[in-house]
Length: 494
Image: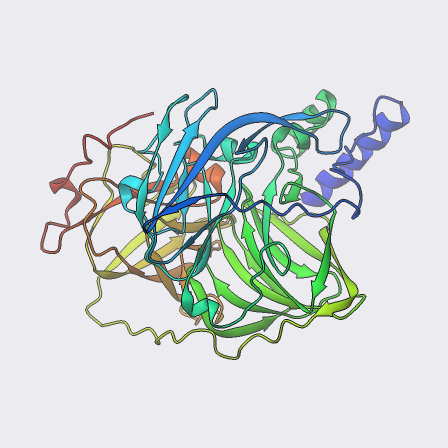
């Protein structure tokens, strides 16, 4: 069917082009070809008083020039598009003043941060237009690469696409002692892979009409890195650390380098791996992050290459090369990646560990679509459980993200996962017909009726209902959802 669709597509394109109506394919060329420098988001300014680090974030609308004939409407954080990188140290209290100067409500979720549920920024913490929300908590987790984005119920995909995306890095002394590449913007680079706003991806009205017939109504998204396409990064050191983030709405990505060179995976979402793993490609579903170190020789050139597969399990026709890395003739010696990165203890699962089952199908989990006022699961504070996630669909890709925690991937259809996945994570791909078992460690304190989310991070699925919520209660309390209710403070229906 795909071949028939492509053939028909080409036939129609040839006909209308020969008729002089329009050039069928939009160029999707944002900016020039590997000459404009890769944008490295600024580190957000902050103040530190006692042990509290305070950030001020201004959510605002603006105009952004993507290299086309005109600027397009975008949203940003402390700027017209995208957001700055927040950086905190383990052991600090963080306070973030989020001012919503947009014309509509939103939220701001700290994806990967172990924040209390009432500070998590999920759909129960809306920030009304013109208002300020100021969450704060103690940062008590390992060095890791995280991110922040809106989580307004039903609107996450649209608001993320407009540009409300930023990286959130946690540092700690143990990682600092390893002397990994750590000079931000020089040899430690955020690589936020994301979709351009819809206005950039669209063609003209006739193109859109044909696409609606041949491509199920979805224009192909233009993929950007840090807001640019086909950009250049000038390498000045022998080793560069890339913090890869899949912030796309609907694409499973396979990332590699154009010359097939090897790189070392050093960290997943929850922090450093026990030891580095050498790969030539790595896959990330929406929301996943990995840190990799790639080495360069003098006068070296390679490009970051992507293969995209959407949630319908349709692979893009062509690979995309989005960033060119070009090294100078004199590179700083940054040393080698240590053979041991962390002293993570092997996972042991007691036979008495409680198992919960989550079946994903269409846009429902366990047959139910999201209800803001329904508690789906209740867990005991400080407990550890196995969450067994099954994708019952025969073709559709899903993944599974849990707020407020890290988990360990125990197995994928009974098989041991790759080493870089068998560590602390918060998001995992669940392919069609597959079962993934997770060992989930829950916070040590209850969340007083404020719910955390669990959901598919293919945001179109989440927005249509593939999300649930769980409460953390004091040890010894009932684990029956019928015995609890969502806090009246948290009860906000959209």
